Amino acid sequence: MFPGAGLIQILINILIVLLIVRAIFSWFPGMLYSEAGRIIVTATEWYLAPIRRVIPPAGGMDLSFLVGIILLYALTIFIGSGNIVLTLIAIVGYALVFCIILVLVRIFFGFFRMDPWHPITQMVMQATEPFARPFRGWFPRRPGQFDWAPVAAFVVLLAAYVLVSNLGRLGLG
Image (cartoon, rainbow, N blue to C red; front, side, top):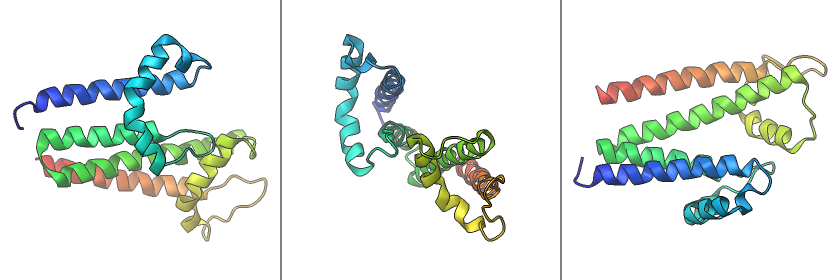
């Protein structure tokens, strides 16, 4: 670790906390327009705006803060280890966790018969269908029946995450 790395990591962690607070504020109408909300937006918009240009909102949801947090965690790992391979493994691991969560949400939607026209339902369905599609031959979608293809995708993504996590541990040890 180089001199000053600890300070940079502390600043990165503060920015991560600000991004999380901004995400929480966005769930409550008007919070981002309060005095605290304006401070949070000012402190984070310089970082999120370029990410938002690359990854636009999907289904009415702004996911730029998630991508921003993943990138900041990866930067922290790189600063701490100086190992680009471990950093890339960490990014893949974080991306797999995000995909696993999305597929898990889709599976829960299947249990609760969510409104198929709701923007969040459509966003989750569109984002996870590329993971479920390879399993459609084994688990075709039938109206009125539970969709097993996302469950198969969940198992494969979980196995990939375990593999990537073990690669990361091997690289650390």
